Image 1 (spheres, rainbow, N blue to C red):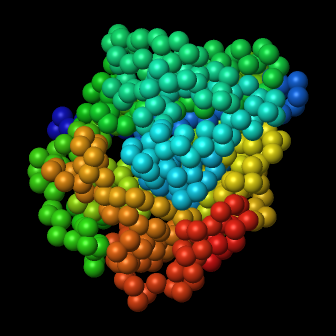
Image 2 (image 1 turned 90 degrees about the vertical axis):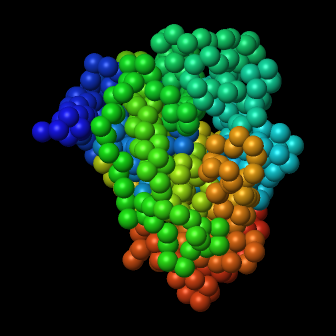
Image 3 (image 1 turned 90 degrees about the horizontal axis):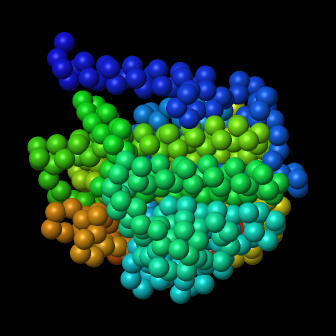
Amino acid sequence: MTRQRLVRQVMACAVAVAFATVLACCSTGGAPTTTAATSGSTSGSGSGSGSTSGKPNVVFVLTDDLSMNLISHMPQVQALQKAGTTMSNYRVVDSLCCPSRSAIFTGEYPHNDGVFTNSGSDGGYDAYNKNGDAQKSYALSMQKAGYTTGFMGKYLNGYQPTDPKPAGWDEWDVAGNGYPEFNYTLNENGKQVKYGHSANDYMVDVLSGKADSFISASASSGKPFMLQVATFAPHAPYTPAPRYASAAQGLAYPKTPAYDALPSNPPSWLKGRPTLKAGQEKKLLNGYRKRVEADLAVNDLIGNVRKTLQAKGIADNTYIVFSSDNGYHMGEYRLTAGKQTAFDTDIHVPMIVSGPGVPADRTVTQPMSNVDLAPTFESLAGATVPSTVDGVSMVDAWHGKPPADAPQAVLIEHHGPDNTPGDPDRQGKKAADPPSYEAVRTPDALYVRYASGEEEFYDTAKDPYELHNLGSKAVPASLRTALAALEKCKGAAACQAAARV
């Protein structure tokens, strides 16, 4: 047996053992999962509500650039799936950090919140504030509904630890440049605190400890709480915790038919891209392994959250939500590491939830997107959902009920290409993210229209890897009508009417 094969088998066995241990409440921070019909039916120390109001608590773990092909290496996330419900057709409305996060906070599409990119006049923290988006955050609604709110980790691109704490957040532990995971500064409720390069300074672990303290204090207060923990991991430079350095060596990249391939009839911006060179493939493989290693600490964070909720007796009254701001391509469509396309590699991200009344080990195929998170959180809190919100609540879908006003399509928006020096998505000497586009994604189709008028259409029911562009002549009239309405819609009623194709 070769050394590489042996390492792969050892790692596979380790993951299998870890997953089995998680299900039995592992000693490294796991929490027991329920085998009952719903994930809110555990017994023992997790049976308390932790809230004198009876309102549920929410812990939302948002990762950065996490792609779907990483979940198989995160046993705590797999345990969360077993304990709860997975939204299999959940997508982001802009596959880029800041516009995706802005959509989460406001519940608005980029064309309404004004945040399309990570910097400049149409992006970043400055555009978010310029458009008054801070006053639309779900945190304000939940705070008014009696919730203690906490935010930890990565906020918005361009935010600096010297910037003030935004309204709506009671606890604020936020970094600026936390991508290296070491040698960063946190704004801890207005105080700048520097962290170094010791193992204890690893940011994901620091956030895990702060989440534990916040949950413990909130449980003692008797007030319901909303906590968002936004990790920088596994974003480049893909820094793992020291304990997981080299843990994924020998792991192969999970190549799909889209790897190092172009769609038939490719759009202009992709046409002519050369096949990947050996050096590029090696870099992609090493990057993927480091991303797996970085996510192992995120996996621990989730386990620690579940263990703390159980220990404090509030597990049965707490929703745990896991997702990512966007996906990530690494070699698919001959593109090196990046995002921003309308392909599923970039827009399809996990949406996994467990909590009171959420059916266990269930998959929901209802299309939803990240503009639906704000109204979901506000609805769980019994708060007023602002009229500016474009999304609809996922509460019914989470609890096994058909949503009353279910959308059938998701709008994806993008401004590009990004030619900013130092942009992490640049590929070689030029940007390789697409030019500006608007797109519609349904469960069985992808329709993209670029600012130039060029169009793409994929029948994803027959072509799940989006490799056969059927072109303009194949676009159904219903999708053109939906896109025309969606890209101008404002407010939940108009946007959901436009989304019914």
